[in-house]
Length: 161
Image 1 (tube, one colour):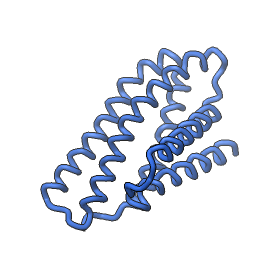
Image 2 (cartoon, helix red, strand yellow):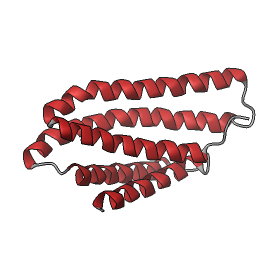
Image 3 (cartoon, one colour):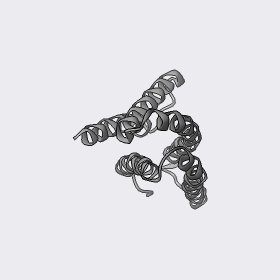
Image 4 (cartoon, helix red, strand yellow):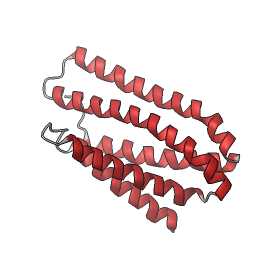
């Protein structure tokens, strides 16, 4: 049951983050400091979720967490690009031209490709830190979090007119 409550926690946190980004369609009146606080909270909650889900030994944890932290820092850069993409979409939603739509789709596909490349590039590092079953478990946890975020975005962002 621990996994269910942990997943609910992650879902709640990501719903909060997505609400911050999508409900007001990234209104510019939101102070940057508030966004940083939310981002740090999400990072901490995700790390707790991963920690609970992994069941690492002390030696595994010593090898895993530095790789995890580096990976999350790189994922954060992709998150920033995604936020910018959502901002651009929100700005252009009512008056979307074909040219703007093309640019947005190209960026969306580029972000997805970068995410996959990042996952692939970190795989040997995770394999060096953990046994294969725990690497698989970690990638499953990341997939769950990504699926929650993707679902929430899909439900909050309207289709192009």
